[in-house]
Image 1 (cartoon, rainbow, N blue to C red):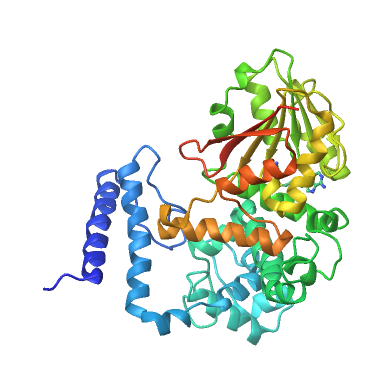
Image 2 (cartoon, rainbow, N blue to C red):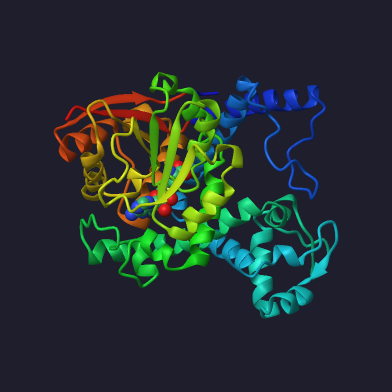
Length: 423
Ligand SMILES: C[S@@+](CC[C@H](N)C(=O)[O-])C[C@H]1O[C@@H](n2cnc3c(N)ncnc32)[C@H](O)[C@@H]1O
């Protein structure tokens, strides 16, 4: 048989699938399935990197094989917005909660429980069933699969999907309109998000006026930041925090609930922390959640990072996943607002994505990175940056910054970048 890419892919899929299967069988682990009691995620632990890589390769190769088999024309028309609309309706009307776990209900009963028209509801659920979300064991009867069950039992996932299929999706739908209406805009209130919410505010100011939406956003972010690659441990273990002088201060700018400060405070008892964020209720809630044994060293403060930094002469100003929310125009303003507070040697430490050059990334990783970049554009006209962009940002913000670059800790999605104030 002549060599071809589709044969190479299918052979590799078979080989790697056999590796995964062998691992599961040898360890008496269940096979992947969507049955109600199926494992909810991959059972391959991080201590088995070869098997985990085989699984990733199968996922990637299946996608490529599918695309090649479809060919360009069918590939282009294979994108399905209906997957999201069906998920959105299920989440919004809390349909998963109305189905007993391990039991059954009917379309009719679901219609009564949710207030939805039965015939319409059936359309959405049958579409979802084709995606393995719910099952219809007998005509008219609805039961859970492992996927629909997750929507009931994993509140964090629910919050994330609700935010994705509501806020993010609506913002994405209006992004083309925003690009047409505000060509090349760097303004955070000239976005798909702003149009979809009919607001003239940037997303964060809009949310601070809508407490329920702000809570949903915060809950979605809590779920997102617990995903592999974003854990605080990467920051805690990959910077020389121990070199900071005893009693030194770290200001966590735009620090939300201060998860990084709390972890650092635990590990480095000689350091003090100030967590700053925009919104009074968010800051006060975070303050209450802070473990009591750390409350003397982790303080919370309402501060708008576009205003002059009030904590002067700190050793470190730390910004995690903050600057990528903003276009260069505003990211520079945030950096400049620090300047009056800086002393020679003060460090600006960022924990942010750095986009590699296109040729350096395998396609499945490129898709994930580029998707995050687009989300920032849709929400705030922000975006992720390549290393050269970070360097330029500091250089253009102020000639007193010295950008030292940084590193990406193994297993982390974010880089630790450092700049120093030379005055
Ligand atoms: C993506 S979150 C990152 C939160 C935190 N650094 C973390 O990694 O968990 C961005 C944060 O910036 C805050 N923020 C947005 N605009 C702000 C402003 N003008 N002043 C202070 N904080 C702001 C938001 O409230 C949010 O907590």
